[in-house]
Image 1 (cartoon, one colour):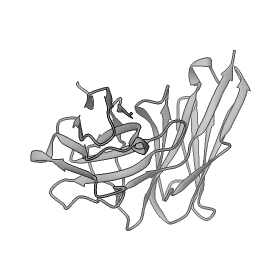
Image 2 (cartoon, rainbow over the protein chains, first blue to last red):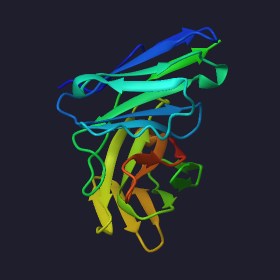
Image 3 (cartoon, each protein chain N blue to C red):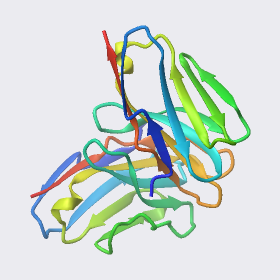
Image 4 (cartoon, rainbow over the protein chains, first blue to last red):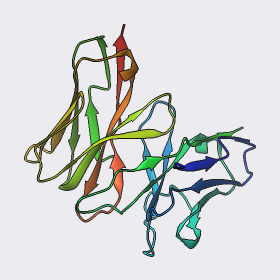
Length: 117
Length: 111
């Protein structure tokens, strides 16, 4: 079946512009994550959606970053007034169940490489 | 902040040798997972070990978990060139429902 789909795969934008990154999770997966990865670095947690619960936004680096998940499916990460330090690969992942207890593996998309010039 | 730290940061071995990577974490966990990443894009799940488990196998992979030392190891036996990738551990901390990743180990298999 289809995996996690992210679009666009690459995005080049000018400093100060807004960008929207899209994630289509695997159908039926209740949990959805956004991570950011700078070149050669680990994954930085951004935000976590689980079912109908309020999202965990504790990883968003500034109020320029926001995300929503409509209808428990597609998610959009929006970065306003982009800065050069926002350049990174933005990864989305979904899992059948949320964290806690037995756990559930994450399925990752191929990411969006964002370059802010 | 990062929950997990992998060690070593980079590892190069000859094809056919075994590769061992370690992960240390800071707080009590529900489970720990290992992932592989090729070429800086999406990660692929390898194995999940729960906090009440001590060892788990999957093909050429062996994962151990020592909750008293807050550490885990990933062993890849009989390495192949295709195993060249970055490997990350991820933890699901008790009371903190998000999966956080370590800094990764870059593994290079020399043919």
